[in-house]
Length: 191
Image (cartoon, rainbow, N blue to C red):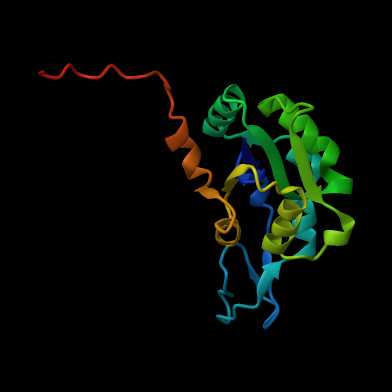
């Protein structure tokens, strides 16, 4: 049996419009920084997203407007055709984001009763993403299953590499299911 463990944000959901709302502030000098991992004012690496911008990023109405990554739709459709199990494992909050996430998955990825959606519980708040995803994965892991993992986070890739095949998304989708997914005619070879 093959099970695909698939992240949502930036892996199958294009959320760059929401990501533009994210702002970082420097804990060393108090300066604001929009994209860098270091402070553009003082050079400190003590930067983090502001609570206000992160809450705006997690607005369910804005999540509902995310568009699917087309190559992910094609690949996941193929996984369904092949009978693979699908587990969507996201850091989104269970209490606040389940309804919008399920509706979005139904609309764009034919989410159904056979699929599983794992979301961050209140008890997982503050846990590093890699720790949360590993704990959740180990909770449903079956040693008789082969796992394929799809995520956009390098820290998650490292953790998942202990358990199966890791695909770096969203780039991997296009290689798995290119546009115009028609089989090309092979040239005739001399015999």
